[in-house]
Length: 328
Image (cartoon, rainbow, N blue to C red; front, side):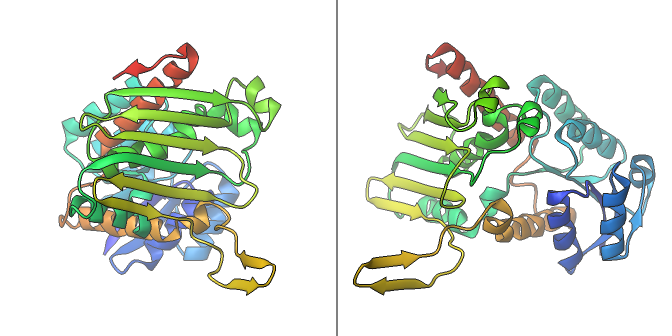
């Protein structure tokens, strides 16, 4: 049984707490959060203890840490955990500044500890099956990849101001997914964006609607479409076209019941948001990290993957500002 310290008792921390507690090989040993009430509620729910950062990192009974705290704390916590030889699961991103990420990964290399970065969409059963079938040669050589990602509603302006912008906060998942599915690094990126939904987002120097095109060495073209608003639910779709066919994963709906009548057909909307849509992915990525802790696997999504996704976000922003395609 692996004892886990959970950093962050907020919305995503609560998801991870349940997965840690429900796994047969892990125990939620402690919770760490500067917001005392949040930490207390989670500790009470799972009958565990509250620790400080220093207590958790120096506790020899803790084998692994799960970092689900505020983004600006991730890199520091990773480095402290590495120095205490803990195995590390960190929610994306490692940091919003790529130089800070670089220095963080140098620390990981120095202490030779495993770091898993939580790009959970890699572990969604639907998207994972596209990758598996493509790698098996089902559709032959890939030619184009379309990724659609639209949130049900925009975040608060307060969140936007600290998020690093749409590309680093939202599209970063799609950058990682494109790299994961194609299995190559893109050599160019072109981005366009608009502020169509909430003027306050534009006033915060961000966008809420975007298209990004990336080209890969094999000739594949990937197109990503993002929006901070979807009136019909959380829109998450992938389409991979190849020389011999097409692989497509559609939305997961709130239910699978359809009403057919003479006026047409009614179906349920897509799942409301990421906590519902990707619940199985969060479980699957934790399963993988347990395998890492047990030395049955190495991290499939590591610090280099986190750094590369952030690099693509930075270059997309450069393209947005310049209006030009950026060579990578």
